[in-house]
Image 1 (cartoon, rainbow, N blue to C red):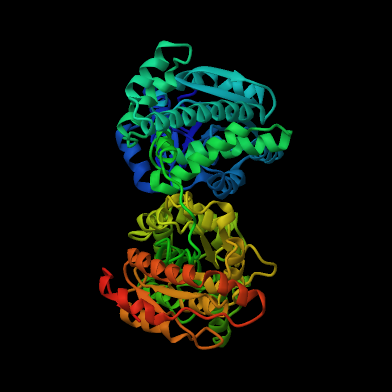
Image 2: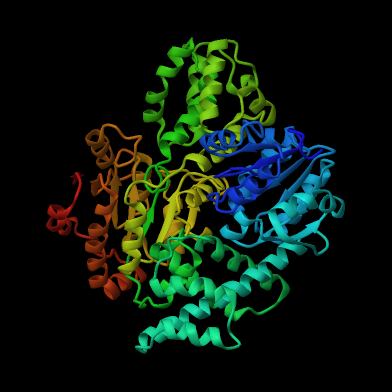
Length: 635
């Protein structure tokens, strides 16, 4: 019976309101899909990155919803799991825990729009564990999802397709099985590419009408009376006229992702897609203007935007603690990973008291360094290294309960299950940090607005230069809404982009980021919150180093600012040139630096090319703008 509680599951990533599948969209699709299953009496097992969402779902449908502690537990408790993920990075971050619980007799139906290669890879891994796999991406947006009017475009197991057809019928108005895994996703990309190109064309036509002093309303009327009349123009035309894109049915960031995947499919098949490519560029521009979470009708804002010449300078930014307020949750996850093994600390209360000092002491450091420190302390007390105790049970019952409670707050499974899933401590920390940050990561205050303002002012050369690895940073970038500014090519990791890894204060990741922006380091602004990061920027000879102390993990802002300016990690003793508390104060600093960069321009480049020492930026030029800064600053 499909009403058996442990038969079907909803695995949602952000708003798991009623699916038995994981869903990393902001709940726009999953909410309606799951609701239709629950209204039909299906009993669902649910999991969501933020536990409060699962609790809300259980409260709304008492007796029908079982809340799981992890994605893996969803699969363990269910015969069939529906998954709905909004991005490729989210899929890569969460799928391993689902795969670990996969076994014979279990099945996965993935409703996300990913790539054919990703679907084929997941299918192969599921089938290698004895399970069945069906891709079922949907055509339709928020309204059709709520109304049960989606169209399922499937590929994969024919027997699983037949088994879940009743559930697909509850959530949609039509379903198709196109063949082997990958075929359904290819059809979805063709459909969304066509839709995106049509909307970009409408947006461009509306922009031209506006520029020609013609009535956009009359344009829509004319189009609706002829052979170009269609439902897409009827639905999105009014939003374009009003320039109101807040009623998000299909987020622009997801529409652009699908255009990007369609272009990739075209490349693989040798099929030219010039119209798709042009529409994709317009959507990317609209995202960079701050419309990533708006409806994809916001592509109109790109069509009417006036182009400008890029500024001379580039802005290179650290991620954890600078762009993202992720240092505190990341360090807390690291602490609870290590808490069972801390030497000389006994009892739950004593361990809890060590958490905040640990966060302050280790912010900005790689987990490998934290492990080395703990191993050193353990060796001093004659205790075995972490490698020998990382899977041992926690003997203190009160501590075990505390550890599990703190882990649950981040959407992590209990310690005893985690050590079985990830016996290696380093692997465990990295995998679980991705899961935790996927639920908790958020941008620091004023970050999104400042990046958009810089982009609008011509500073389009922006990139991330971080120690942290992938997929952790890309997952956080998506969760923080920063993807419009930082596509994959603009995310540079000291851990993941070098073999062996090159952690800060080594200059490598900053040099890589500067090279990717085709800008000499001396014309780059680096933004950092840690001593090692400032040291890395100084060692890379960045033109201007801005320290930032606005993240929540920094309590003593004055003391932290003084530390950033001391230059303890740089080879020449250089520290941050200026430290700011409010991220939006970065804008006038960059503008002042860029004015200098534009002025020195050609002469500066000629000096660099001839091997001479180019004139550095005169920091005294910043003094004139300090009075205009909105928050505290140190210089």
